[in-house]
Amino acid sequence: MLALATLCAALNLVAAVLAARFYLPLYLDSLFTITLTLSFGPIAGLIAATLTNVGLHLLNRTFIAFVLCHYLTVVLTDVYRRRAPPRGVGPYVLLGFVLGFGNGLLGSLISFVVFGGITGLHAVDDVTMALILGGQNLIAAVFSAGMLTNLVDKVVSAIVAGILFDALQRRYGSSMMGRERSRSGRLQWLRRREAPMVHHRSGLVKGTMKRPSPGDSPNT
Figure (cartoon, rainbow, N blue to C red):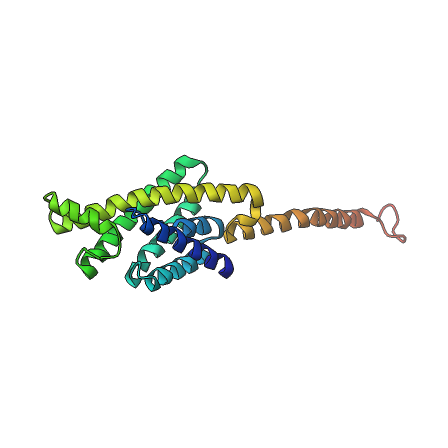
């Protein structure tokens, strides 16, 4: 799990750096965290989220405070996975909107409270400045820019992550399922294995009860 989380964090860093390199108003820093959470659950996702944020901070791409957004992505993805396991593109679009709305609110709040609305590290600042120049006040511009960019980013990330997850499921089957599902599968397998044994033993007991002893008479 640690190795997979480290790999996913490294892939997140590559995606985020490429997005910044081409100056896209997207983050793409939680794409593989979503895939990992869908596959193995929240613990692996939280490890990947932490490593991703630390790596981005060391690369001067984000601040440690925004690790809360990564954690929120993991929590919401895990809740969605437990309540309605995604199948097909449509549910992943819905997951993206949920993630985008949650991250848009939390990220904008952190940006405004901690950094005054301008972090100076991402192209989302250009969207904020454009909205301010268009007549919006600072608070409205920060939250509008954060909501817009996070919705687009998380919908794209959720769709790509969902496609990857479905491909892994088809390739590896139950081995890519979450820990809870794996445990449930093992319990069901054990029950199926023990059921014939219990039935066999109960038959032996019944047969023993019906078998008369050598010294018994027919009237006994």
